[in-house]
Amino acid sequence: MNAMHMYFVRLNPGYLGDQLAKFYENVSELGAVNPGVSGNLNPCLVAYSGSGDQLAKQCLIDVKNGADLLFVEEITDHSLSAGAGHRVYADKIKRVFFNGKSVQYKNLQAFQAGKLKF
Image (tube, rainbow, N blue to C red; front, side, top):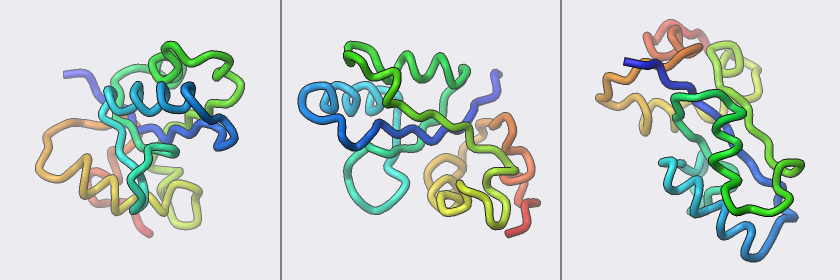
């Protein structure tokens, strides 16, 4: 089984109209989850088996001029540690992506095993 990667994906909020709708459609097909409580998918969390560059291409299928406006960051044990940028998403990742699932996540071994200190 290939290990998955966890990514934080965001399209510049100034990007509107049909292009934003297509971005939403693409990330929805990838199983994206909103990291907060709102219903929209910008930003979103995505579990993906490929690289960040491959994920970016999938997010931008049929989105014109989006490459300079897309931010894809891999979520790792380090970025989830105390004081790090992705720490605020830890509970959502546990509830949605780890809850009873046997998927292994590359670069999230300590978090997945419950060994990461917050």
